[in-house]
Amino acid sequence: MNYRKFQADKIFTGFEFLDPGHMLIMDEDGKVIEILAEMDAGEGIERYKGILCPGFINAHCHLELSHLKNTIPAHTGLIPFLLDVVSKRDHDQALILERIEKAEKEMALEGIVAVGDICNTSITLQTKRESKIKWNNFIEVLGMRDEKAEANLLHYEGILKAFTDATDNGEGASFKSSLVPHAPYSISNKTFEGINNRTGHQIISMHSQENPAEDELYTKGTGDFIQFFNTLGLNGSPFPATGKSSLRSCLPHFKNRQRVILVHNTFTAEEDIVFAMDHAKEHLSGIHFCLCANANLYIETRMPPIDRLIKNKAEIVLGTDSYSSNWQLSIASEIRTIRKELPEIPLQLILQWATINGARALERDDELGSFESGKKPGIVLLDNALQARKII
Image 1 (cartoon, rainbow, N blue to C red):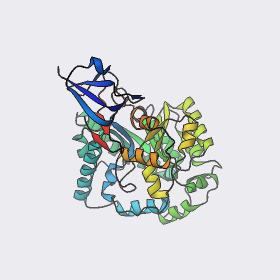
Image 2: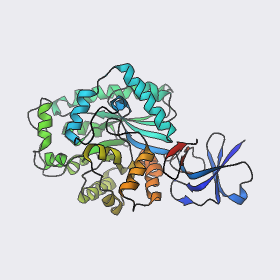
Image 3: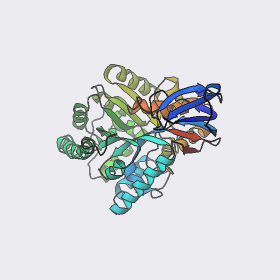
């Protein structure tokens, strides 16, 4: 069997940096054989300037919104942004499919090897069937009324079936697909309960605390979301005020050993971080906090409280969100933004978020996320400016 031998200024294993005296050995199929000292590697070494990393994990994306690139203005705040997405997402299907395919290629060239992708429809299915990226398809449920909960769930189960049928037919062999809630401001209690009952030991992704109005909605039953509901034809809030934050009000619905990815967390308080991690210990298989730094700046001009998450030893992962709220679908760009905004965070830690942590969150760490023997994680090269290029 033929082997490929890789050397760089640094090798990041998924856990730590190795110095230039190490070689990464892979077989011709991209499977990691071992990491050796240079003196033991022999000839035929491929040498690179920069950092060699395992392929990146994009833990949160909306591939089906790729046609909205440069369509929705930046810095509007969450609620105007949501209304723009609702009003502008319908478009010519041929254009939507073209932009989906283009975005998938962009992510692959940037070294992204797995994506947690939000799906409101099955329109991404054909592109994903032919993609080398591994896809966690999060079929996103929206349902604000208890009385419509079962009908809504049946509708989204139909979309889920399109993805699971593809897996059963061998067309989407690398798919993992599950029902997930959109956000605390769009899911009724009965809908939450229905999702919980259908997702034991599965992966849940949920938008969480993107705007302070989300907490006000639950603590007091007031705030900017009331106007949002009125615009959608609802008379006030469909949710009862609980006197608690949105996260404390909604996360307890999940108690069937799910693995939960909380996305954005732009306004998450420290007590909510602690609460979520304590709830996970008792009721979940794990909890992860997904940062989408560029999207947070695009929508709210604000970074999430990364220092609080690090202080509390939260499991952090990275996502890009969608082209409706980002300038590019690039984990390398997310890394650059975090480095620019918070230069005190060690690069090694951020790269862990982009690789092994993301692989754990998507339950793909048996094959991706690190240069460990037997895995096929892909290789991405980061140059000195932290620009990324796929190697394998």
